[in-house]
Length: 165
Image (spheres, helix red, strand yellow):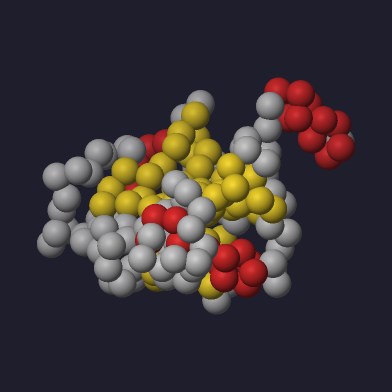
């Protein structure tokens, strides 16, 4: 199954800002009823047969973010435009995303990248761009989709509000 990242709106039936109850139902709809995982936690995360993990983060009874973790087999793909964010090396993903948006290295973590205008956040445990055998460092492990401002401190949130007023 293909999962298309549509920032800041959502992915598949998961829409940022939807009520928690609807988010729980949408998350449940992404499960494969023929291959339920004992690791699934309703209202938190599911694992698809490919190993793709889909997690929801709610606050104040609303969906704030969706996080997807790299599948272990190619049964599911996570796409932003034409870029398969988990199948391509992290360096190539970053290069190809730059054709669509601004993407920056995380100031605190060389292995992570952020598209702040969309809010897409890409992470891997360490940087190993030149060694495909080091899968956890060569490929992104997770992508998080949220509204811009998701990572803002209170001061940054206040500044963002004043700019948008």
